[in-house]
Amino acid sequence: MNVVFFSSKPYDAHFFKEANKQHRHHLKFLEVPLNESTTVLVKGHVAVCVFVNDTVNAKVLQIMADAGVKMVALRCAGYNNVDLDAAVQTGIKVARVPAYSLYAVAEHTLALILTLNRKTHRAYNRVREGNFALNGLMGFDLHGRTVGLIGLGKIGLVTAQILKGFGCKVLGYDIKKSAEAEEIGIDFTDLDNLYAQSDIISLHCPLTHHLINEVSISKMKNGVMLINTSRGAIIDTVAVIKGLKTEKISYLGLDVYEEEGDMFFEDLSNKVIQDDIFMRLLSFNNVLITGHQAFFTTNALESIVQITLQNITDLEQGKDLVNKLLP
Image 1 (spheres, one colour):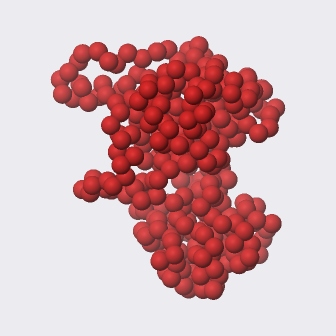
Image 2 (cartoon, one colour):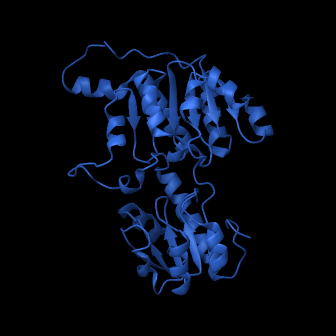
Image 3 (tube, helix red, strand yellow):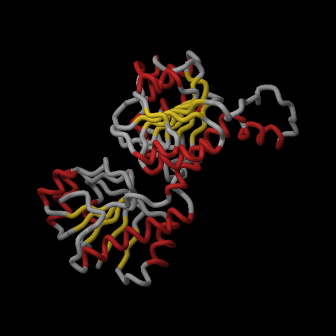
């Protein structure tokens, strides 16, 4: 099948070309994102492969359907950027990668927690400048601390297992309880209690717009650490900045940002970043931001590539799409 990739990077092309030797599809890689102005580039392709910040709205889907596109293959788990109702109306199949490496995002979550706590990023810069003073670098033992996890899907559960290994008490909230969470030793609770009791709060839920806002932040412990490796818009960034200024939030670790679409995955080092809210975040010395790299391990990429290509092959062969998002 002819497949066009949007928002592709050199590492995408490398991993997909290697894995495609057994699938034998015709792959075309484009660096531009998919949106209403670039949809014309899908012409001649049966499948379109997109990533987290590509725009797959009703207008884009209609243009693709008119061009003969039969499938949107998401090379990611999230699908909040896809208008599923419009996909049904146009008849375009949508499939995703529901899970790749459970450990990649969970381990990055811990990397953010540990770095913020022990301030290793600041210590690294100091030592390079010959400054070996410890002032301002004091952290705390994770052992015995209470960590609240919002979202107990597969990644949330792996994160809980790692935290239990550090000796943390883990509180968890999800829309439903699971036997696996109980086996791990997670104390299931409601959001208000999780906010009130947690020293660290980490987000692992699907997109719930501004779940973390002024009201929810007001219910948190003073000096809380907040971590988001899920979806950027779960957090109201303006409210979080206010929390940082009042010291309600003492540590903030982000791998995602609600307005990341025009910045993340690009080299903007020679440009002036126009997002004033993002730049305000960078002004805090207790904020650590990575550019949506939690998923970025060889294990995860190999899994993403294999599942994505298999989704496309299943469509080609008329098989049921195991990872479809629509009936």
